[in-house]
Length: 294
Image (tube, rainbow, N blue to C red):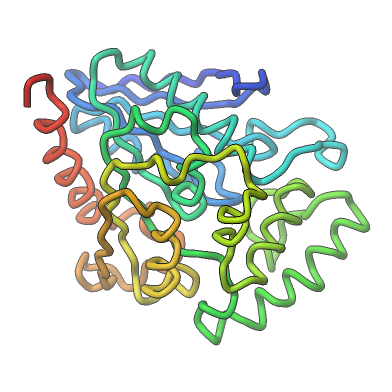
């Protein structure tokens, strides 16, 4: 079974260089874009991408600006806003994937914020289906109560302290993701302290340009009870951002896949292949619908 893996640099819509990795199987029948959660470098999804590619997919993983290989040398001086990932980076990654897999139906796996920003993509209509994994609003009051003390300290103590000292949020024991640009942290904090998350700003016009109402591709959202962030409640709340997209939530327990825990990031770790098969089966069901004349 052949598998080709190629690292490449793609340009965001404003020219920012984004590092990406393309995984290609022998006889691909679909293309899959993998959009990361906040602070997760693309390498975190490599095992999942390889698995999908070995089953006849072309898969693209990529680092948003400011993250992993797409980080500038001076992160403290970087000027950006959180939605830039959706407006500038995600559409460029989709364009690059379509170029690498001409004529193939395109599907999307969005982890955490990777599912939040689809409505900012000007070319989102090129995607046939979205698999949301651990996608829920960041409203702290909707999260597991045991998680609240840590996240409130992150917003009011750890994060602001790092911005004062370093100009960005450094990775460490409390924040185990990659270093975060100031523009990511500040907007993320603003949203997470509100029950509406960013939905009120969508309605007020504060987040223009955006096209959340234009998203019509089906969304299937996988939620896990041991995830303290993407709960059934916050998952349902986030889907309200896509009022015209057919959507459903699947609540799955770790034991359903023979795993001990999943949490917010475990869905892409070794041992969760039964979940990956579930996602692939759903994409496969959409391949025939995407075929010309179907």
